[in-house]
Length: 140
Image (tube, one colour):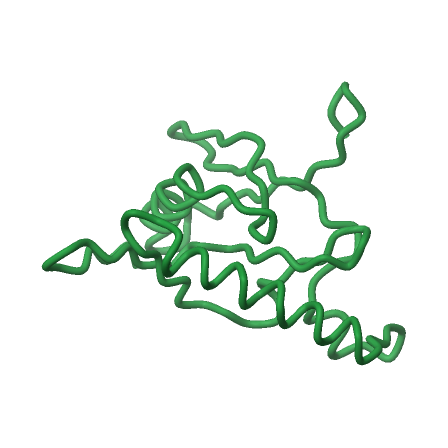
């Protein structure tokens, strides 16, 4: 929790993993250019030789993965349709709402996070690709 009362989640990259630096750079490049109600909001990023971290808005309802594969949670029909629409709107924004389209490349239930109102937010842009006219700038 930040001093102003905002709940946050910190995503700290394991720098021992091959490609961690590139993955972090790709996330930062994508997240600094996109702002949409159905994308996870980045509050702060930290990058130095010892640590790479993102401070994100906390999603209290967890991931869609938890809701799909747990016996403790159950989504009704309306919630499922609403989540599908939220994800579709986020993807439409990434593909068509930017000067350079962005392809997420890792859409799965664990990368769809739910806020306190069960609004879906797409996250984890570690292997995203930014499409540049006449070439593909791969950020994998």
